[in-house]
View 1 (cartoon, helix red, strand yellow):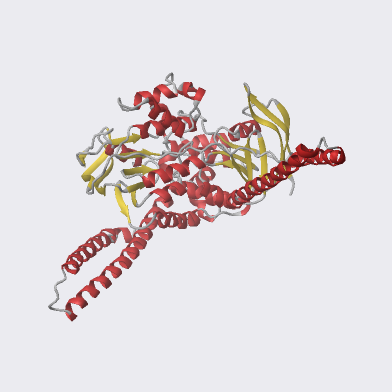
View 2 (spheres, helix red, strand yellow; view 1 turned 90 degrees about the vertical axis):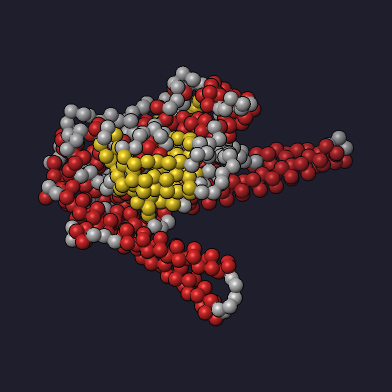
Length: 602
């Protein structure tokens, strides 16, 4: 394949920190590259230099005549003086129907297209940026965390697009599942260098582990031989009859030392557990006839929501439908418009907001921030231990919060939250800006946490590892999703595959032509109805399977009583009552999922 970009001897230094050190690599046409590395390794810096947003200290970047860059910039400010459809059309020079056709692929309906881009939520602004970039027909996409702030349906649509994209892209993402699904080669930036691997992420990580183990064993063997040979030299180097052999052994030791390979130290990973006061069984929170929103504008209503203490509940759904509003209402940051939110009387709620900038004092240092958040009886050792668990040591403790990276901000806020020892955690996108390793550690810690967790996250690996109950916010309601998180994602992926059909050269296929007829929003709405009906039917099928199992168990208990009418079996009587109650509840859930006649014919 033809090269599309040739990078030679690229270097970048910030102060005394060498971020990129003499990097050279070639990107070929059609490559789908996942750029990986720890927070601060230089991934974003490399993308900025290639995009022309930052200058390298040394080296060259040669773009070929057939190379056209498309760059997704995280912090680009969108305008407020034109509508979204005008912004897309004016910026790309393409007719509005063509812009609407592509925009519909990413869930931008006529409602969003009629608003100014800067009036949209963060997730919808990201959709606009993606659409605007693709309208320029680029041949090389530079995507720095494109999944941040995207809701799951849009993330899956983008994933389908990129997986089938015939052009070239380089992307970073903290979501390993996304990287695994769409990237066919891996570049890792670490310690100023870059490593290339022609395979997917899981294969690369397995290969890397094998290489590290091979290196460890080889070095161990060499050191053992060096030690053994050194013993001979120390013993016989001054003995005349063996002096020549000793000199030969000295040369051999030098040769062995040259064969020792430097083992690149693995970057430290956050390590922590989340303490929790003792929790008894029972309901953690109960919402009755709840309506949520702002300034009397109702976003969702008639919410009936109850979870038990110790439950891990994921709140899912599209951006702008009320997930964060629901969390804020549960956390007491917003008052209910109607109805009630009742927590158990010993509930101690810790709330993690989505935007870190709103929650950290810019001039306060890391240590000052953690000290101010800690309980009054917390010892200095406990505060330093919490800081250390999130990789803040020595001079890092004296950094003011205003100079921290996004990942460092998130770690400070998590350390602060854990120091306070809450028995309820409400978390709004806690994984944003964290590297994959820290996300994995956080998932394990939350799963082992004895308290209650209610959270929003679009990171699939993280959500799947933590959650045991799912609630979807959609069309002004909060519904319990019957099934696992994997089943929920599978439901959405079916829709993404259907509406995200890809034609030649990775461009929009027939499924995206809604905008051509001026009906993008109408088609999206109609597909939403179909999606609801399909999800409801699949949920009913899962309920029917559970009911069958319960009915089978009920039949076995009744058979026992029929065959043993005089036996006293209080345990079986208790279990029979429980089974009948479960069957009743499952049947009620099935009926609630049954669509109305009007929904069927929509």
